[in-house]
Each structure stands twice: as C-alpha cells, then as structure tokens.
Image 1 (cartoon, rainbow, N blue to C red):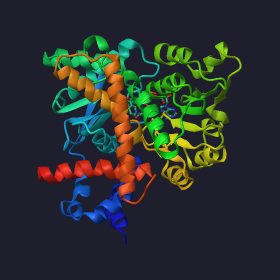
Image 2: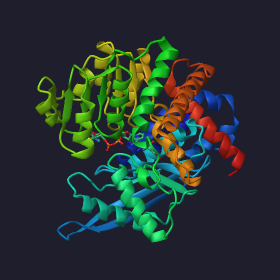
Image 3: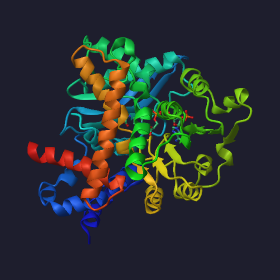
Image 4: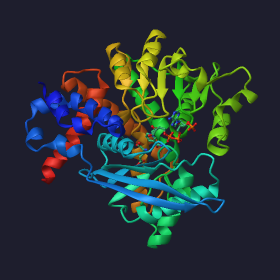
Amino acid sequence: MSIAETEIKKFENSNCAENKVFYQAMEEVIYSIAPLLESDSRYAEYSILERLVVPDRVIKFKVVWLDDDNKIQVNTGYRIQFNNALGPYKGGLRFHPTVNEGILKFLGFEQILKNALTGLPIGGGKGGSDFDPKGKSDFEVMKFCSAFMTELHKYIGPRMDVPAGDIGVGSREIGYLFGEYKKITSTFEGVLTGKPFMFGGSLMRPEATGYGAVYFTQKMLELQSQESLEGKICTVSGAGNVALHAIEKLLQIGAIPVTCTDSKGMIYDPRGLDIELLKDMKLNRRVSLKEYMDIHPDSKYTPVSEYEENSHAVWNIQCYAAFPCATQNELTELDAQNLIANGCVSVTEGANMPSTAEATALLLSHDVCFAPAKAANAGGVAVSEFEMSQNASMSKWSFEKVDKTLKVTMHQICTRVALTAKDYGVEGNYVDGANIAGFKKVADAMIAEGI
Ligand code: NDP
Ligand code: 2IT
C-alpha cells in the first residue's frame, strides 16, 4: 500500500455525506504530497497530516433574528478555526442555504494551504451560515448580521481570527458585521477584511480575487507556452464578485470573455460581455442574468433547465481559456471532455474547488494548463492581508500600490508552484506543485512550534 493509500485509510470515517467535499479536498492533497512524505520522514514522525486535517476548533452557534414581518427566524452560524501555525486564522464567511460543517471544513482546509502559498503571515479558517441573503431586504440582512456578530465577536480579533467575505458576503454584509463588532467591543480595529473603503477597507479588495486569477493565468501561460490571453476567447462561470472582476480584467488586457452564469442560467455574448451592464445588474440591482438580453438582443440566454445532464452549458462554448468562478464541483468530467474537444488550453479555478476530481484528472492528462484554486484565487486573501497591514499601521495604500503588490504576489505564487512541481518530478502539474509547496510551509512551521 502506498503512503497516500495508507493515509487515506485513516480518514475513511470522515467520508460521510456532509464531509464529502472535505474528503475530496483532503484526498487530492494526500495524493499530491506523497513524494514529499517519502522524501522526508519528519512529516510522518510529527503526525503532521493527522494534525492538519483536524480543525483546532469548530464553533457552532444559533442565530436568532427578526424579519421585516416581526417573525422570529433561526439560523445556524459557524466559525472553523483550522490552523494558525503561520499567523492568525484568516478566511471568509459564506452565507448560503447549503452551508454546513462539511462545506466549511473543505473551505477552511483549502484556506490553510492557500494562505501559506501567499507567503504572508496568515493561518486558515472559514465560517458562515445557512442564512440566504437572496430576496431579503437590506434591513433583514443588517439584522441577521448583527445577530450573527453577537456570538461571533467572542472568538475573533485582529491577531486571533480575521474573517472576510465569500459567497453571499460582500462589502454590505462586512459593513454591518463590522458596525456590530464595534458597538459590542467599543473598539475600532482590523477584525474583518473586505470593509468598505470609507472605514478601513483596502482599495482593490473587491477586484482582487478576479484580477489575481487573471494575473496568475498570464504568468502560467507565459511559463508553459509563451502564449498570452490577448485576443483569445475566454469563458467564465459565475456572476458574483470573483467572476465579474475576472471578466473586467480580461477585457482590460484585450481578451474576449463571452460568458457568465448564475444559479438560474448562462449568458453568451460572442462579441464580448458588457461589464458595466453586468456590474449594475448583479452588484447593484441583484437581478437575473436574463435581463442582459433586453439591452443586447444578439446575446443568448440558456436556462439551467436546458443544460444537458451532468454538464453545464458554459463549458460547451468554444474557448481558449476557461475560468470557473461560481462554486464547488461546477465543472464535471463531461464538462472537461467538452472543453478538451473544443480546444481549450487553459483552466483557471477562480472559485474554490470548482472542478470535480475526475474533471481535474482528465484535464491534466490532456496537458491542459490547470491553475488550481488554492494558487489561482489567492489574490483575494492576499489583499485581505494587505488590508490587515494597512489597518495595523493606520495607513492607506494607493490603488497602484495594491495592484502592483497583488501582481507581484500572484506571479511569485505561480513561479513557486511551477518550480516545486519540477523539483518533485511532476513538471507542469500545478495541482501537485501547489499542494506540496503549501503543505511544506505549514508543516515546517508546525514542526518548529512543537506539539
Ligand atoms: P458571490 O456570492 O459574489 O457570487 C457567487 C456566484 O456564483 C453568483 O453568480 C451565484 O449565482 C453563483 N453560484 C453560487 N452558488 C451556486 C450554485 N450552487 N450553482 C450555481 N451558481 C452558483 O461569491 P464570490 O464571487 O465571492 O465567490 C465565488 C467563488 O469564489 C466561491 O467558490 C468562493 O469560495 C470563491 N472565492 C471567493 C473569494 C472572494 O474574495 N470573494 C476569494 C477566493 C475564492 P446566484 O447569484 O444566482 O446565486
Ligand atoms: O476563499 C477565499 O480565499 C476567500 N473567500 C477570501 C478570504 C479572505 O480572508 O479574504
């Protein structure tokens, strides 16, 4: 039995339905790091893997709030403090009806290695709630956020645990959460990132994940094939924070992003997407993508009901580069087959683990340049750390400084991942490169800190 198989056997009990995505994330890492474990016996001696896959703390609490009809609503809140070997726990909050402990464990586990790859002093954590902000009034979102923070404030702090946004949590929610934290604790400190600029947010935090994913892809293509994205057709999924800013940066560099999706369907505009319209529709008015056709009648809307089984219409559009930026497991094996058949040469994971394990394996086996989430979408958390740094020194960075530092950070992550893959005999495999480089950084710190 190989080291990876032996390790996976130890975790079989965690493979229950709720833990499925967590197990998927863990299994990928265990297979990737097998050569590292074989080359250095200290990692087994110090039981690093066994310690890394168990969170330091899982905090679960009740959130009771009053809706606009004065009816009492009850949700569940979570904060998973996974690992702080490299710095304070750091990671987003997700508000979505599908949120449960297993999903947050998968996201928190990925976050540890992602944050390590940035080279910045941040540990890994994640949190959220099964609260659904969709269809709620601003006041209801505010009341929920206040109730959520009533409990969460006990566990967070600028040097302890610093939450940020994720699906369903943007600067509006972070603003309400920050306001409540300030009220309860009478302190004005950098306890959350992704704040509005007017009270301590960093310029470019909203853009950071999407822009960073494009910077990463540019570097990866330069290293792997000396190619650029200019003039190339790109497909993007999602229509939230990450997707819209990836589309914006692709347009700025002369690429042609032609698709985006939400949970109801896909818009395909072969001439290139109208980003100002999309931002107004999704970030301001929060309406369905179908409305895009009112202004651009030549575009095409495909509702989810017309997707083929086990596949998503967006990955059947011919493209040079694909950017899955919506949610986990949204790119299936069949989608990967379609991308390959249509000549796609590059896939960049803007979302967290958007590709299934089967899809990832297929893309890698067909030599598609594959940028895994924990490396490619690290730009968001990197600029979050820049925000922590600005808050701690009571300073403000210019847009140019944040953008330049983000670009350098993404290029450094890309180069480190590529070199690590080469060093461990898997040249060109950015999945293994990212997992080995991230794991090694955290593991070495854990060994140095003792048990
Ligand atoms: P948003 O809430 O801003 O947008 C999410 C988008 O994905 C929406 O268009 C939403 O459609 C769609 N979506 C969500 N769930 C589903 C689903 N189950 N099926 C189909 N579509 C879905 O979130 P973000 O853009 O912030 O996050 C997107 C991804 O990027 C997530 O995987 C997140 O973890 C990851 N990420 C985010 C970072 C950040 O800084 N925000 C940083 C790094 C990674 P609809 O509106 O119809 O629900
Ligand atoms: O998945 C992620 O990296 C995020 N949601 C951002 C985390 C952060 O702390 O900015």
